[in-house]
Amino acid sequence: MSTVTGSTGADLVVACLAAEGVDVVAGVPGTTVMDVIDAIARHDRVRYLATRHEQVAGFLADGLSRGGGLGACLVSRGPGAANAAIAVQNAYDESVPMLLLVGQVADRIVERRAFEEADVVATFRPMSKWAVEVRRADRIPELLQRAVRTAVTGRPGPVVVSLPLDVLQDTVEGVAPARRWRARPPAPDAEGVAAAAAVIAEAARPLVIVGGGAAGAPGVLTALADRAGAPLVTTWLRQGAVSHDHPAYLGSLGYGVHDVTWRAAAEADVVVALGCRFSEFSTRRWTLLAEDVRLVHVDVDPVELGRVYVPEIGLVADAAAAATALTAALPAPPAERLDRRKRLRVEYEEASSPDSPVLDADDPRGGVSSRAAVAALQPLAERDDVRLVQDAPSFGPWTHRYLRLPGPGRFSGSAGGAMAWGLPAAMGLTLADPARRAVCVSGDGSFWMVAQDLETCVREGIPVVNVVMNNNAYGNTRDRQRLAHEERYLGVFYGNADLAAFARSLGGFGVRVERDEELAPALRAALDQDLPAVIDVIQDPMYGLPPGLVPPASR
Image (tube, rainbow, N blue to C red; front, side, top):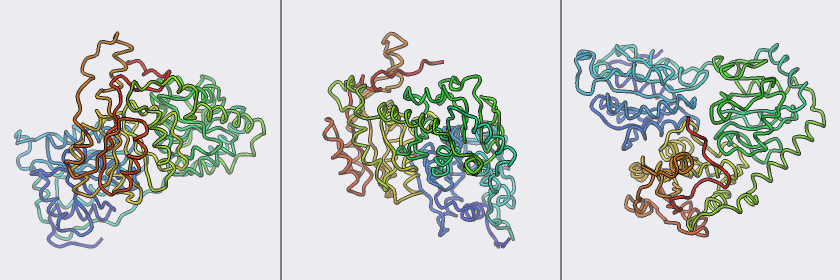
């Protein structure tokens, strides 16, 4: 380990970030983190990006991590840390690695109810993989680098490091970051692979389920499905894991699932689940698998095996490594399985077609139709230089059911339920992968929660294209009040400003779309220029879900 003479704790923090490959730190300035910001200002490899709200900094870090790096955010004590909590909780629920650095009151005044003093470790422990407070400057490399490794090892997740002000300001001699290293993911047990292969080989109606823990290896996943002669489905909002053009692909589980997709799971006699947690939405509140189904469950986290469904074979392993081993161990599939898969695929293609007769009942009530929105987005889904980002609007089931993703890795969606994730995550994804233009589809309620950071996009040159489905309503809650509360609407309708004019007022690009035929040209215009953009898509306040779809009842 090399040594650095006369470093402050803040200098060590930044040196550790650089050593661990963190090159962007998002945050909001505050009194207890100014030393770290100053250390970044003197560093040539780490960039500080000031957002307008700590929640945005956290979601931006989330997007950076989904783009392939490790997202980091820096916030000050008390209220600043509390504002970032939603992003930490969402990352924990979705298994997204993230580093939150929190400036804390000085150790010498702790427990005196100092200004904005709060117990950071106690606050974040339930929603993070690890929360730690560094009490000595010379231990910053040890604990901060351990935190980074914790975030990215095993089941990924957020970590929180509390840094008291005096620790950041202390000077230390002869201390520097350790070398960067990463633990190798676990390989599957050979006997377990053999046993799992024997179960799959006996199947008549196998199914492969791909969760978020299996993303990043599309060819390996489809190879397993082909060798097993099985259809392949993804969990909710993970439909970007494989190409939708592959003959094994049969759609995505979760809210808006097609009948054929659900039936393939319900009728399966053997299920191979890769990196899948069997969440509430993906399983329709844990009703997905029949009691007699034979389950082969693969996950890097042993805690997930048997949490919901008890497997016949449970493999603690990296999902891609396990899929590769299973493919090699399986015999060629019988023709009957492949014929069945082909029949299911034909039925799925008919159900998911944008020309499906089901959509003839769609009534946009005079506003822009969501059917037209899907048609306008489809060419973007086919471009290598575009990444679609799905926020949490009631428009989501439309893309879930009818948007075809021919190339894997071109779609990101948040399954954690946090509104306002979309714009900040798209910012992070753009910074992580500048070669792909992020096009984020949001609802107006979600967009307005973080709209102030469109200014950050303009200032920092982050050319996110925001497609805002604007119906002046919280659509999901409106539909529940319509169906379950006898149309007693309260708190779900509001008035929006002109979002396109708002974008232009900040120096961005803005266009208002009021008719179906205007949307595709607006998207092309937004992508043909380099500014952050807002496309304000005007819809009727009562318009929302695809025909025949109703929101699940509250519980």
